[in-house]
Image (cartoon, rainbow, N blue to C red; front, side, top):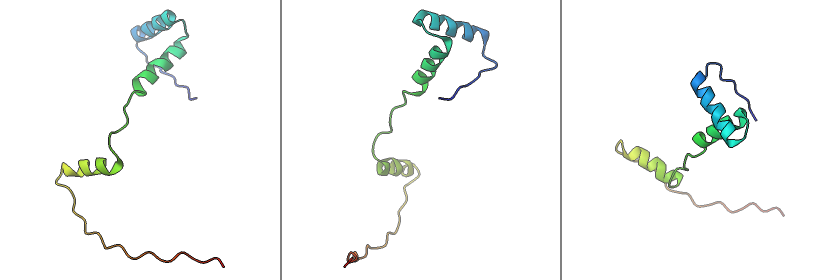
Length: 81
């Protein structure tokens, strides 16, 4: 796990973090980890599949029409005789 140092943490914020840690019965480091995980770990996964998300992004600017070449017939699989 990485460690971080916050050199200019506001003294009031540090005191509140310390009080919160004491109330939870843990160290300031553990409480800071919980606060960060709570703040950063709750992001919901994007809805829809990748195609839907890309389509929605380009639909806002009018979409994009691409000329797709026709698919070619598949080759026969190699023989390993």
